[in-house]
Image 1 (spheres, rainbow, N blue to C red):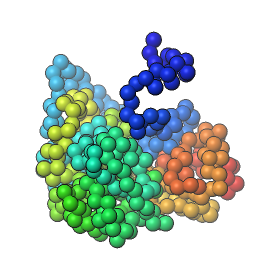
Image 2 (cartoon, helix red, strand yellow):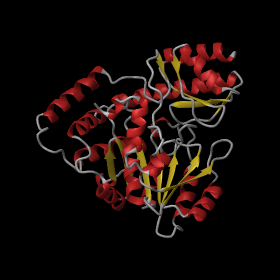
Image 3 (tube, one colour):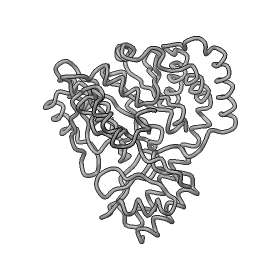
Length: 379
């Protein structure tokens, strides 16, 4: 019998006897609701599964990798890093040597590596809320002090305010999501460079992380922080294959940075942390990047249509460069969320009070969302 099999009172007593870190006591694990409903629009997944051709190539690549599963994988995954560098050059026009690429099991592990390397006891990580709810958990798990500043009313980051926060708190890590989750807000390069300039003044150094998990969904003309990477050795730009590539189940995140920064992450990563199967799946998908990115255009168009539809019904909508839309405001957002769920549509109750977030799905899923919202909110 395991602890999970015990009655609740006995389970609480058993947990109390464990030497759990004080700051972890009473906490629940992170995770959005996973419910079996017809329309899932709550975790920013790509609604389009891989094509038959992609699945076939992935299956063949995994079969090939399986023949060597008695051996440890390439712990520095050099072939995958080359493929990722090739993809980033095609997607953002920035040529990178593979030594400037790092990867892990989802961008979550990439972020954890960053906090393990540059955070820790006596150090501070800084971001600007509202933003991704996992950031403070990365800080907590690495015993890094977490400090949060505020975004403006339109969810942008004021570079003057950001610079002042950096000077005041002297963080060793600054986390900037662009596009930001849950608001969808992209940061102009001028703001990012202002933050990088302020970070130069931190005693002991400061790494600035621009999290571009939704970077491929940015609107035409919106730049990537990759464009200023060469000028800033303390900059790391994070990406993922979970969203645009439709590979949330594969768990592959990566970043681009200076070789010295990447080498620091190699120190803290667990041995052979990226399995041979994961590497094979990612490389097979990257070979189909042109096909997979074609679906991104359809999601961008559906997003923009959704924004216009919501605004036409008198709702507030945050400008978004991601594959989701933050909208509101509602006196009782939970009632709206529950009403949609009762009609088979699951969205996310997140962000500032009164706001809700909907991921962009297929045209059919978005019709179901709109019909349910009209009925529940009386639009």
